[in-house]
Length: 351
Image (cartoon, rainbow, N blue to C red):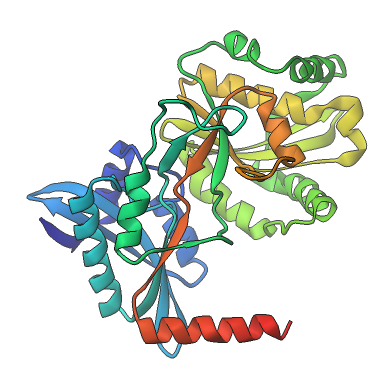
């Protein structure tokens, strides 16, 4: 087994065939990061000429010449394969150390426990506990305040028709969709010059729900990187030319990911445009033979008896909870890592 740098094209071809692929582990995300001061790397473990594991990494100087390394949505490998995981991660650690890195963050697109619609573990379902065990044995530490979701909600399309999928929706969700259509709500794709419409809706929603919205420049860059490749869509739901709800979707590999959205509060109850927008995209995903419709992040699991409204909204469309392995960090330079943690703790105390 060898460990080496590979070309962008080699990585792209491997990622397409990986069962752990996701839009975060793409050259397009690398290009986005590079436009914001990061450096991208493509690394792989090979058996002869065959790639067995790979990752796109980005790095950025942090302090005193030391850099933080991140594998967004990666690396791409079977974490239950202990020999492969051990070789790849140890090789990665040596590589990062030789490039003045002090810590590595990973967030593999790797499912752990099979769960149902309510978040309960499925009896006799899969449980990839050895993946977590292997990471911890190598010194990885799970982060509790990670930006990538630990729990997601997804709809298995499984070759079903839109009508078959709708039959599994909750009755009130079907009612909301019918009401939206009766009120004349329609959905269309936004052009790049119309992203201001999208931004206005997401910004008002972020203020109402107290989360930080992305800047318009981010949406414009993501549009340029992914839309021409057919790997992203920006949609708006409207009636009488009034924008009421908008969302950004990623279309990568076998799945559609519902990434960002917002709704104008003035029209939510009377028009239910947010339901029509989801129904439009679920139909699109089914008709274009995607295997999974991923509603993305949810909160309130597994120990919260009162999940948030976002989870309840998504659950109305059928599907099941997806538990991901989480985000981990691996100290590379222990002294610098511990000093950085200490300084961060002092800073937090001063707030």
